Length: 79
Image (cartoon, rainbow, N blue to C red; front, side):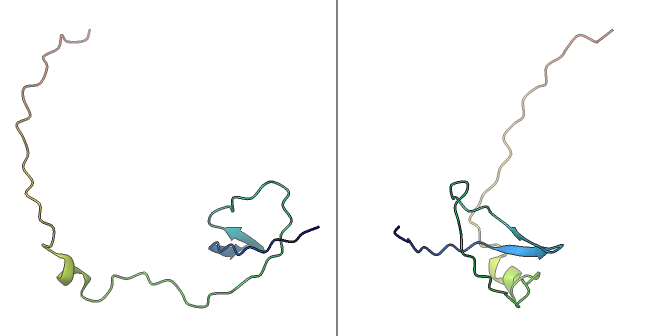
């Protein structure tokens, strides 16, 4: 039997004693795996980068204009 080694990186989290993957890997059902777990101790940042709004505000070159909306359809009243 020939062994094929491939690296697959998937984000996940540990919940109630189980590892939950954010995205299931595209592998055939029943594929045997050897799994290595790497713990990322750095918490994701939940804040905007410094000076984000100062650098981005007014940068889009957009000229938005609302076209005429026309007249609405007059319908017979419901009974």
